[in-house]
Image (cartoon, helix red, strand yellow):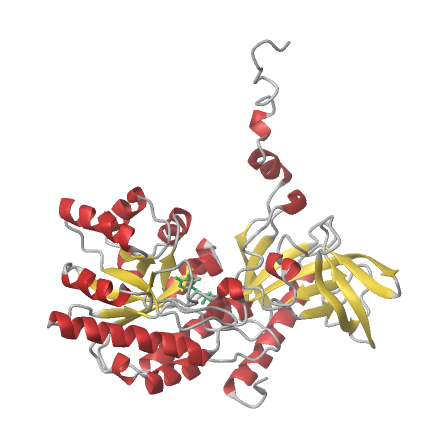
Length: 461
Ligand SMILES: *Cc1c(COP(=O)(O)O)cnc(C)c1O
């Protein structure tokens, strides 16, 4: 484990923790959180702005002057329009991978030139729309490239177009998030027989194919492996340009995937560490011959989100204390279904939202869903929680409470952003209203209650 206490990241972590504690206390005081609203998501606006600024600075420090760089936030990490708008203000674009994500980016006001479309299953209609808007598209496979051929022949487009390759450098500790394994479903598998040659010819035949894309991993993939993936992609771009005889590929999209430290408040690794490692491992990438696109998701938002849930009951089973809270599988789906891969830190707060003191006891932090495995944390040492206290799942700003899972028809919690109010207090702004019971009924076919009873089979009474 990297010790981050004495470096910038560690200090930033302590400030972040202090802001979070202040926000939880203020949320209880204002009634954003309480008996009637027992779960809420909180987003640290200061922290999000800081991470965006760190990302920009890290790459500005390593690229040649004048290099075009687009940091496109992977919208799937936190698909919330106000978050995308905040990032837009911080100079960050959007990487989208579905019609829904594109709609969110457009609702946030992201212009086409700051948007990248990368899904493995784009329909002809999606491709046509992206090309009409001028959004950058990375084709995933030869069949999709064929569709782009037809579209480019029928109407000109200013969309920058690229091809996604899988350098097949290997996986990380989480199989489901390892995109560069030999059999990954993404991109053109570069080491398969004949694939490299096919890719070179694909570029030679298409002067409009000017970008090369790879995303070689996410949480669990070591930095060194990510850098190897980027090095492979850079070497391929060099080979293609050399064999075509001109710099046709002008932009390399290195994907996202910087892992997040879920074990403490410190940020590690940092964007600066990754950018420096890339400069060492792939110096040619920063020599000014290529523009750059990045697609970070989790690392921009994870540390800035907290889901806070009220403890409804406490009990003991088989000698183990259990705190039954309102946060479980509906907001922490990955952690509940794959607890070994996705452990979350839990912070205990008292009924007034103050950090809970007292001797620690090993306890389970359970969620509200009706299955035994619905646990946010198992056998965790924390001050013994009591009814009316709050349990906070930390580092949940990406792929957690923004990714509601409708088990037990549990309502989507409200999400509020917070920032200093300028007079020593905390200001809140609602990002997403809590889902209402009427909305749950409507989204569950409430207007079609008779749909099945009126569908009569012939001959039946
Ligand atoms: C998911 C994804 C990302 C972002 O990954 P993170 O681990 O959240 O940084 C970037 N690019 C593509 C193509 C992705 O699928």
